[in-house]
Length: 509
Image 1: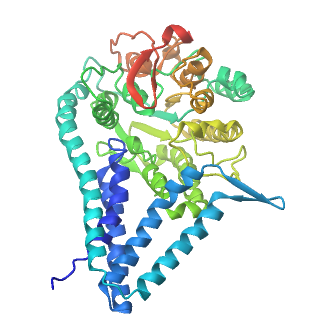
Image 2 (image 1 turned 90 degrees about the horizontal axis):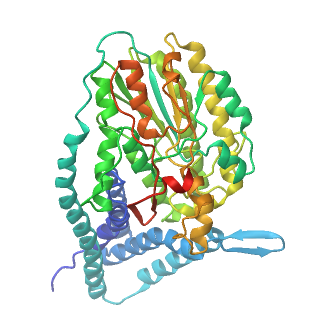
Image 3 (image 1 turned 180 degrees about the horizontal axis):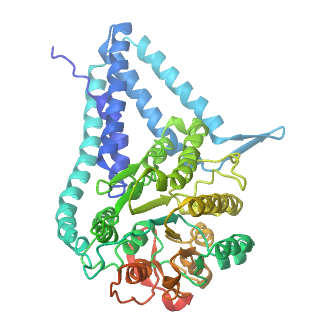
């Protein structure tokens, strides 16, 4: 009789992570996926041999491990199906987790009991599980491999376009630090007043009093982060002809990490300081001189947690997510003291974008979740506004500290990559996402855009400047370059077709 090979626990350990990667490829670093897969494999091997020693049966040990993995990684998907289900008994509201988690535990205990007690030959069942798990893994591996082969050549062809820098500039002198701070999804004053019924006059007055130029009519060039940042950091619009969305996501990721702006400044003696955001697009950057680490809980891990049984304990992870944001603000205030010479400081801060984990005074929000990937996350008006108010307070503290302790007056750019999406989320909920109404487009495209520049540079700014022209203006003023200003345009694209761009400039002017 042939020996039974027990391989399905290892395949079931790797498959869910690889599946999630395959569906977010281009937005996630492969190294991160490999680390998480290695952790689950080590866990599975350890407990397999432990159970094998206890039960004296490798088939039963493998079956129990695979059962646990299947239940563990499927939990979040069933929780999504249940959605926002609530059950009220005697005024006590019971959430989906409090119902689903004990059911999953019961399934595991029953499955473990029958696996231990059964006297049936498990050879055929083991072979079936080996085949099923191997098939699932192979399908995901094929998807990842095909994508990699298709996009590698495309990305290589576009690398050259992000390494040609303007050279007609001053190469000597004492230059100011440049802070480029992206507050993800921060609305402008008009949106806050008309959509969220909030007047941010105190914040804008503070900025003006400090010497900032507040762009009153600024709009985003694009409504998705990877398009907005790759455009502003390269001072140009995108040309997406002959590219699929997945291909262009890889191109945009490279454009963000190795941008024309960074290359230009490095040639002039600047150090590139990158604050690790937790978002793969702007997290670890191998082109940066220094990557400042602020926390372990990143975007992919947050999404993975919500697909597993750890979702029932996500409150434990929320404090880690809060800690990352708070550390970024505190570290931004200190970087001018710890690193000598002119610096380009890039910080993409994932607030006030969902998840809404800060109240208006920085308090933890009751019932907060780590959900951030769905457009529907924007539906919580109160959560968004509370987080924005807190962010504005932290920005004021940061500006006070930077300006009061700096020796050379810095350049500070506060900008959002796109506006919020409450109206957009409402339309998605009603199945009306194809209807590009003016109010929805304005909310998503109108952004915070303010500048702290040398006095002689403010004359080059204007009330409708968009991010694509940000560094064209700054470089022309600071380094005597001759960049032409581009037409200020805004492009909309849907969530499922983010690279199918629609020019909406005339609709929102």
